[in-house]
Length: 387
Image (cartoon, rainbow, N blue to C red; front, top):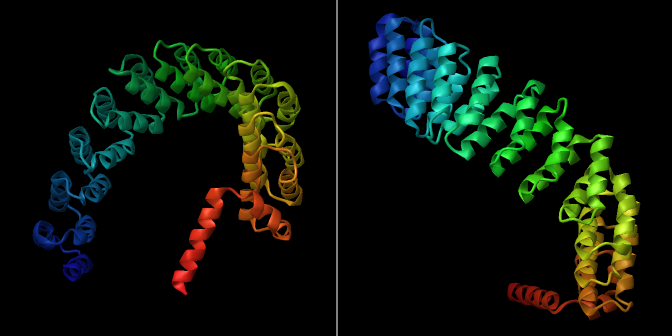
């Protein structure tokens, strides 16, 4: 089949079109793309009709046939009609058909995409994404309308996400208004959208959303403030992190990523007087701080009054690595720390296989947890079996 298609393509003979069209009906699927390409090279109404028939058939080769048809003289309108039918019908080729429509700049293609987006089919959300990728004024207006009137909150949220994907500051006023929507999912989508679009008033809206009654909206707004990387956004994060509310831990994590220097000063205060939850937030964010600050804070936390915090500090130091971190873990084994913390430190040292751990192997073995010893025993048994 491939040889026959190549021969017809080399001769570019219009009389071969019926034979090639017949081959499309009987040839293996893997040969269809080449036959379609040969037909396109020959051109003409009959070749175009054969390619259109392949696209309408909706098989695995339909997408290639659609793309080819759209590029042929007089084929774009037919390709659009077929793509609309495939997209509305759903199925495996629907996404590709929508992509074909997205590349068609005509008002007719846009109207078809909008029609699909206004429905509740599985392709409605993808149609909204295609409108956002088009980015023209009419597509943006359609998305704004869908964000207000789509049939479900999930579809309204998707319309907002697609609208924000353009990163056009002109959409900022609409997104700001959506941050106070009655649906929490819509609010969260609007908050994330503001991070992408920016624009006048975006940061103020995020600050307001960080105090929203819905915990998910608050958390999303706080993450958004951490992505703004402005002095005023960092100041708000520092205020929230130091305020002691339920948003304080997430605010600290965002601050540590956005402004490590400001987070370090707050971390020192938190480790001496903050709640266990806040101290855990500091420990989990230590990797975002300067290495020397991280090592100092984690080493100090090994003696924390909360055993969970101290154990988390062991993990943080093990991940940080380096001689100072190893020495801090080794010192735990001869300290008055709870046995659980000593076990965690010994296991971490044992896993590291460092020179320091090997030099003090006896001490490490003494404090290894039972589970670590059991695992080691199983490995030895397995080695003996192999022998």
